[in-house]
Image (cartoon, rainbow over all chains, first blue to last red; front, top):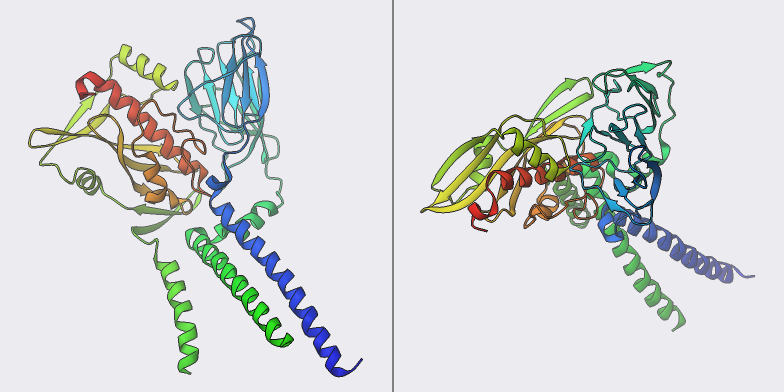
Length: 229
Length: 201
């Protein structure tokens, strides 16, 4: 193989590998851009996550979904959303208080709400986690017969003996948590790590990538044509 | 050298636009238990009312303390417990014509409350929403009209559910939800106080 042939082969492989890299970068840019505009991807699916039976009313069920709380009056054949003012999302637990089933709690991953009339009127229960600058993720809820609340979070177990007015940690809660790398990578990818400015830079960068890729393809075709001539 | 400058200048300009673009508001950096807190005041109450009622020649304020029956009805409508005892509703007119209603309200964001104004038309539809005070270091994208203009034209029959009826701001879900909750609450309160027949619906 002569030096000329080797250079030509290297140039050709460089072009194709370069094109592949450009495509990968373009996909990264476009997906980053789409993550900035989630509306274009449509709403997330409304998956049911939990269900609870009303101990007082036969065939009445409540279920937690991604969007909030739904109820069924016919044993689960049909469901209707409870249109509360500020529904929690990703409702992972619904609990009728033992001994006082008119008091119902619904736990979302970032909010806890309670109804004291069986599920008609609701209100939020603020959960002070004493975690500077960080909102704990709520995982599960247990309600004792006296109304005592036990809330499992990703930072530890919280308990309230006054219906949610005050919260105390039960046991160790200062376990050092590993950094949420998924969140970090997502924020880096979308530019959210640097707030609004970062998002704008990523949007401009994605458009720049699109421009570079398109002009690169045009130049690639032109160069190939001129080489063949 | 000139060629190099020509290449670099647009990039520098682009970066400057990106950095200075969103800035409006006075940053008052203070420490809080939740970490550095950035209290950004975008509108004082006077500025906000002047903005939403820019065409008004008369402005007045009405206070409403609902009776227990009214409170129960309001709670039933919203399926939500109402804590406030009294509501302050701003009204305006021009040449005897009703220009609508406005309420300054506050809803809890991720860690801190967000203060905003909701202006309704005389026919009880949302005309304008403005974020007046934002108290957290992140998530203030909700102050932009790109997000807020989604509320325009909505009335009390709209659910205003996040990411279904209203698209939230990426990275500011809790703040977006707080705004949607507040707007829905204001619609319920004002419509309860001034029933549609009285509002000329």
